[in-house]
Image (cartoon, rainbow, N blue to C red; front, side):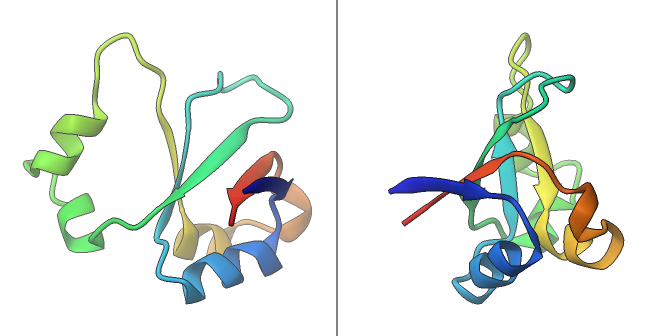
Length: 87
């Protein structure tokens, strides 16, 4: 496992492997956050009453999520930042 720069080609590769979101515990102002890919059922993810959302919403723990499809469709490659852990 190693870290690579976050960009569209990496997001496409992760999506093809079945990953749907990236999670980071870094501060929102961190200039180089680290992201961990996860496979999450997106229907459950968008259901605010789901157990997954409840588990991800831990008080006093900063969890930042990036939906891979959203990033590919709405964020320019040049605006992506940070590093992603990949196999």
